[in-house]
Amino acid sequence: MLMAKDQNNRYVSLLTLSRAELNEHKKKIYYCPCCTGRVFLKAGKVKMPHFAHAAHLTCDAASEGETEEHLLGKKTLYEWLEAQGYEVELEKYFSSFKQRADLFIRHNGKSFAIEFQCSIISLEDIRRRTRLYLKHDITPIWILSERHVKWKKRNGFMLSTFHWLSSSGTTLLPKLIAYSPKTSQFTILHQLTPFSERHVFAYPKIAHTQSLHFTELLNTSINYPLRNQLWLNKKQSWRLYSAAYATLDHLFFKALYDAGLSPATIPNECGIPVPYMHLYKTNAIQWQFWLYDKVLRKKNIGDLVSLGEWRSSLICCLKEEKIVLRYMPQAMVMNPFLPMEQYILMLEKLGILKREKNMYIYAKSIEPFKPSFLQKEDIFYQAVKQYYEELMVKANEIND
Ligand SMILES: [Zn+2]
Image (cartoon, rainbow, N blue to C red; front, side):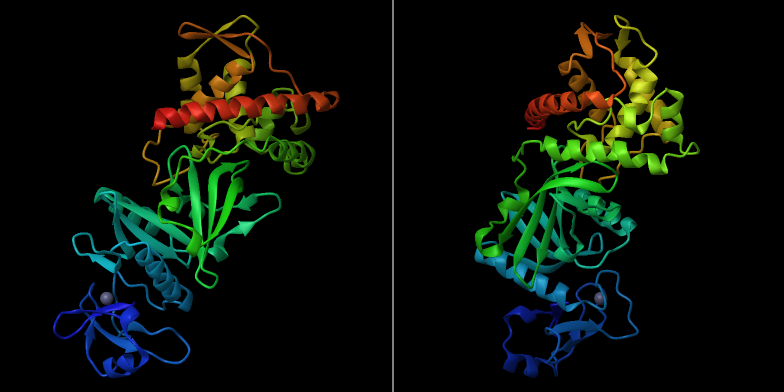
């Protein structure tokens, strides 16, 4: 902790004290603003000066064993915000819901709690903290330690449930914010686009605090082009290599074989990037196959398909856990139909479906993939790129 109360109930911030003053203050008695328990001012040679609870005390709000990285992160982020003219409250404690924010500011009449997260806390903790902030009209901004960002090649990242729970942005455009106090650099992963449960494409932006304004953390208007070639490469390697773990006791692969398909021959139309698809934890290849399998596979060209049919098929897949939702506490609307509706719009653009009033006609059949299609697959994903970007623009407009 960097804040405590003195015997006169006044706040003392360690960010404003000089070395000489620190030594003077060491002799005084301090209390935790959260639990009112006794805390001690530690100002040694190794770690940044900080307050620590007496060993026997347990405190709901304070993170014990606070690392140097966390202390330094709070300090440098505080200075970053203050330099931009914000009135920053360090370690603000909300007694009404017993939660302490690393930093708190107001911007454009809105309240923001900024949490610099260095350790992997339990998923239940993130959920609870996020929910409590939102309930009290405070927008939490989770900033992860840069150490938690795992880069793969070509703008691919490995993200876990912890990362997704810490994501911010909008329901349509989630992003992940990371920070390194050592280098004073932010790494922002914009527009998280998952290929699979863990492998996610994103648009990384690296910026030094000196060249980044706080509002950049809130910026959600960015709409990046789809890197269709990266997606296509991943899809092609999935075709080649997933057969290795495609056993028949695996629900998905069994259904695939029952449909007369295999990873190598899965249709182009199963595994298309569409807006909102991150709301499903299940990867696009699988959830789109499940919907194709339930809704279209046994239909003939010219048959009618109703939206109700799509919806009940999705509900069925959710119940059977063939499709699993991704829990994102920050997402304002958690409408499980959103990715599916975008998929239907995509199929319409690709000419597979034709809309007729409130119904769809199965207009062009979805074919198993043949290796001789390779050339065509390229063209297919060029079209997907264009349609995806059109759908994103439209979805973003609706969001505004
Ligand atoms: Zn305490």
